Amino acid sequence: MTSTSRTLGLAVAQLGPIHLSDTREKVVGRLVEMLREAHSRGAQFVTFPELALTTFFPRYWMEDAQAHARFFEKSMPGPATQPLFDEARRLGVGFYIGYAELTLEGRSFNTAVIVGRDGSVIGKYRKIHLPGHADHRPDAPFQHLEKKYFEIGDQGFRVFDADGTRMGMCLCNDRRWPETYRVLALQSAEVVVLGYNTPSFNINWNEPAHLRTHSHLLSVQAGAYQNCLWVAAAAKCGSEDGHHMIGSSVIVAPTGEIVARTLSEEDEVICVRADLALGDNFREHIFNFAKHRRPEHYGLIVERTGAGEPL
Image 1 (cartoon, rainbow, N blue to C red):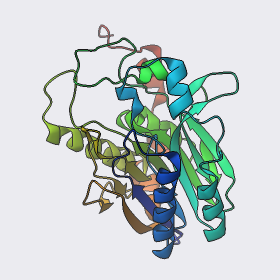
Image 2: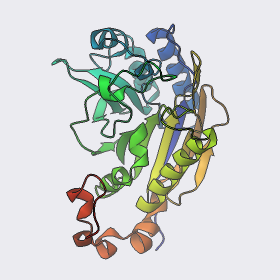
Image 3: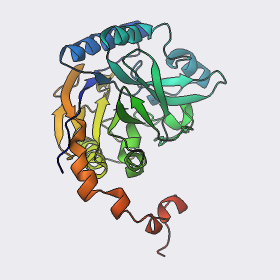
Image 4: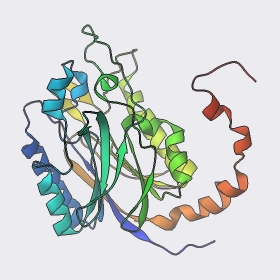
């Protein structure tokens, strides 16, 4: 089977550190500059990181009201982020961006949106696989309080028509769970975009730092290959006020191969001409879901949350 080539200029815009002292306006200026660079290199869609407008604030314990006032967005776009949307519309470039969302009802989510080339929001995703803890751990070198500051996402994994490309979203820890990619692939997604903020130090056990990057790459490559998808993964990385996070932002092809990878832990753009038909042979011959999947034998996946006794 030979597919007709259909391409997408796909970019990842990695962010270096954002410190507590950095303003929204300063950060949005950095995003706009990377959007322009990506456009100059042929990008039609740009993937920005998780919580791309602020430092990774869940490492700090504070009252919820204080976090909401300082780190959350009540609308997207809002006054500080409008210039990014305006520039996307001017350039005709779509993008994905993660942020902390505070709803009109006072609910809080770790959220991402897909924005079309006309600057309009096409779709929204709220993070489902929240890592970390909700209790105060003052003796830890830093905390990971996503379970304190965010609710579990309530909109599921969905696929959107992003200017002619079937695109799904997830956020950070979601990328480690195979169910994420499979649910999106079962909706005929062609591209999965995601942002992450991953500490290089594990507060739960002494995990070698290089394994943090290894498991990140393993997860996105397996998700891409086993589901015949392009995956674009954007880090916020480097040392934020002394707290280090991994980089290695990547674009992965449906073959599972890394076709572009960042080299720094600073603001950096990578871009490829992604052939969206590249996954067709895999969908037809190896991972032909309709022909080969046997969901009648997968019941435990939804019947059990944790591991239990053998059947």
